[in-house]
Length: 476
Ligand SMILES: [Zn+2]
Image (cartoon, rainbow, N blue to C red):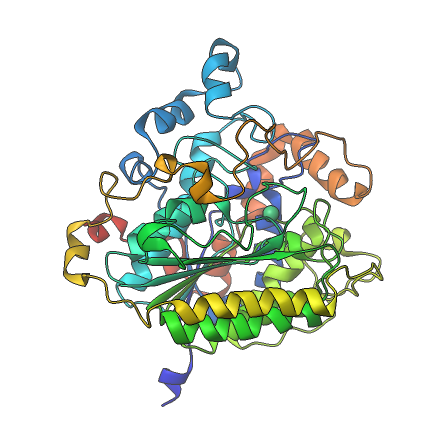
């Protein structure tokens, strides 16, 4: 039947998200989420999506993973009072890569609300796929901000999914190692984490192929270390055989896919050489297994390419082809002079030679052979909050040997060196407009509120902003 064939795709979007601002020279621009949204609306994808505005995550939801003290700190810290809390800023790694900015706590609750809300929808079987491009902040730790991430919405969404799904597969194609998620689930087989990332003198420094999990979690963390310049073909030659084997051996009930776009060619912080199609091929491949899937954003610092990539991937999830000619949209000036959806990767050298790729692939496939097929976990424990804070493996207790590649005593690697952007002036200009436009923020908000537009134009978008996610019922 046609209905069965067509996937029901939900999409979470908070119109305010684009107004949060890390700072003028900071490479993380929440504005890219608004650009993505505007682009996909103008491609007409709203006709195929159920659009939801997320309910902000509640304090008690955040502390399912994070420590009470850390969340309390995020709730209270402001640009005005931060100078009175220097010790805590240091303790929680807030200040440089992860600055204090206006509305920081609301921002965290907003992107996390979409991810938890998405997990609830999958738990209830209301959708086959849920998208939250504002989520995917994979570096945040239990009591520490890291790499532009404060609250780990991914861990929280996985904990929500774990109430109704026995085995959850996490896949991370951001150029940076998905360290926060790996650490949270390092000692359990309930969640398998798979990260493809640049490894070697690169943030966050973890993610060696030797790091495979610990104790009950041994073999359920998987790391695929890559070198500069990887292209579509090389990436696919690793991704597809590895993920095919993962699906065969682990047989997950649900998938969480972090689609970080800093692995694209030309990223301001990245050094890979993927095209949008090559990037999207990973996501498309995972949809062929027909499992409930939560699709999240992540890194991505050449923001015109982030918007292109995530709009295209939204189309892929809907089986809708998007024309290469970009439609008129509110941010069209970012996409000149070509005004096209796709771009050609650079001619940079691919340092991942054939022998290296084969070695990595074989090693990972060998490890996958060792795992017990579809590990059977005591599912009956799950709805009674088997993974609540007290019982959850606390990665902080692991010693550095067990984690491998520990960085004790080393300077913390930085994701961003604090330099003012040189190469990517296009990104700065429109963003400066946003901040310059502080007083008229409200009008730009209304304009950017695509959810409202959907509602007006179609009359079909009633779900958009009224139906907040039924998270209140969904708990426990
Ligand atoms: Zn990243």
